[in-house]
Image (cartoon, rainbow, N blue to C red; front, side, top):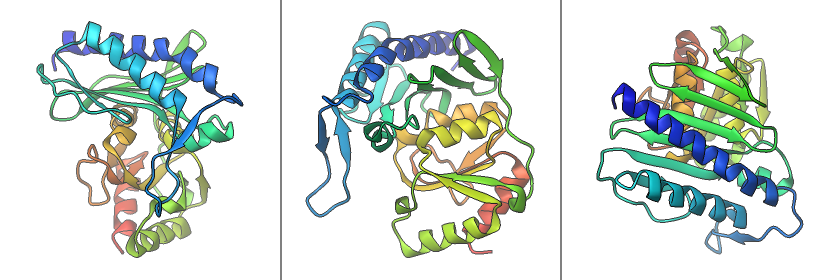
Length: 268
């Protein structure tokens, strides 16, 4: 993606985030919120709300008008193939369980993928008015109530000093994954749960040092990758490879910390 195309896509991403903020706020902490369970009868609860669907439909409508040749990969509706080489990867509410509980640890995720990787991403939190933005090869910025500033990850290198975030221990679906996370949890200074996309945004801001998760979908991670990378951090799978397709993900503030985390996750 060229520089002019990246600027154009970033402007569209901001318009998407602006357009759906009122939708999220209208449904958040509403007693009238409609909720369905997408899971099979014997599977874990997998909620989807009226807000999820309305937000994704609104973003799709804007993209159909402004970027009709681009593809769309979303959480709630079928993928639209790309004719331009660019695909928008959108998660209308990352952290639906937090949304249902009235917790602000959720966000709207928007990424533009050039066919090889996500090149820009936004995590927007309508309730707090915060927006975390990253452009690959450019800056990471934090925007709040009209003011913007740059973001940089912390310079933590030692696991014993690290603050670790994870959405829920339940994301580790196999015994080896659970054992790997237990090893990590025992090595770091502190672990906090329930963070969803907010944990990755806080890593880019320099507030926390590590995020370790599994069972992610592409829509869960692609918007967050450019934010972390532009802030100076690293995000990979547990083997150090490309995390854009989801699954096992580790994000770290520094290369040294990332290498240490990879070693622990893989049994060292």
